[in-house]
Image (cartoon, rainbow, N blue to C red; front, side):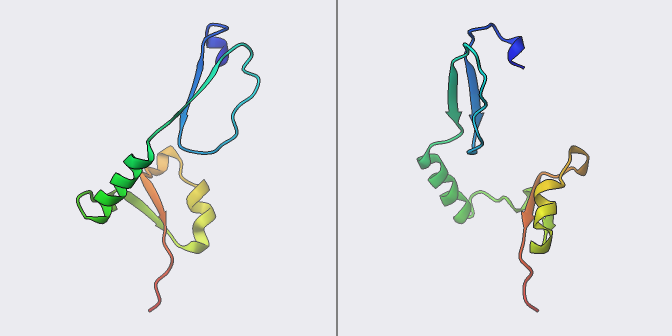
Length: 92
């Protein structure tokens, strides 16, 4: 993909994880961007806990703890997964 850029164009990595940063960027300047500030995250939690934002409808697939690996690796575009949740079994 870097071959599509001007040889000295900056490369912006946008994300929310701690994955390794790619190497071999040549003369490209690497810029990082994060998706939110701590205050944004805290406010989001506040809205969810307070019931002002409801998210349950986004969970389209539920997996038991014994299916955790499948939940993390199985979703493909054709599975129509919006959000997969790993849910421990409740005692009967």
